[in-house]
Amino acid sequence: MEIPETTSGAVLKRERVRAAILEIIEERHPGAVIPSERVLCARLGVSRPTLRAAVDEFVRAGRLVREHGRGVFVAAEKITQELVPGAEVLSVPPAAGVWTSRLLETAVRPAGARVGRKLHLSPAAPIRHLTRLRLVDGAPMAIEYLHLPAELVPALTEAELEDGDLYAHLRERHGVEVAEADQSIEPTVTTEAEAALLEVPVLSPALLFERLTSDRAGRLVEYVHSLYRGDRYRIRSRLTLSPSGAPQPPEAHHPGIPPGDFAPDRPVSFSAHGVVQDG
Image (cartoon, rainbow, N blue to C red; front, side):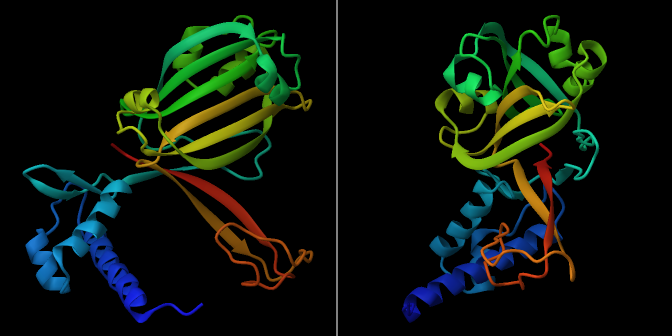
């Protein structure tokens, strides 16, 4: 399809402005003010609405912070939390910043149809339903909803849910040693209640994580779904493009790589990193 010149020109101009602002962000330290709209418009040769639209995009993405009456500032630096691939047990190395949990709800009740199906249990099976607010350096980062078969953790305490590594507690105090997890991630938006907990506007972008965790015997021991702030958490991946290995089917597709960009006999290995913006 041919794109009209006026449309392509507008797209290119917006990308040029975006690239210029991104360069300004990367040149400055967190908390530094960026030049005023008047200065940037003159420097880039664009109108204020065009510039403002680009700045708003970075504000929504959490790269800039607008303070009424003061100006626009570079947001705090991001820290990285890497999920290690190929580990013998499920392992998440410590991320920068202090991670804590605040228990919002705990109850034992029937699994219900959906959670029971996830954990391969009867809808009537007793489940520990838990809700935690995860914080980084005291600032809310995510809401975590955990579902654990009650018979596996009959003595799980509130202190264990708020302090330390939950998986370490499961292993050392309850004899449950997690080994593998199947996790999916998708975009969503916050409800009014979620927004209040995360201290963001209603319908703010967010990332929904769903994870099913199994132990060394292959038994499903945990179903979790978590809502992470979209302005402070993003996923970064590292791809290793191997020149040799088993051929892949022609229809194979890797995130962010359009089909056909790489030959089918060059397999791609993948590792993911969660990047958290330090508040």
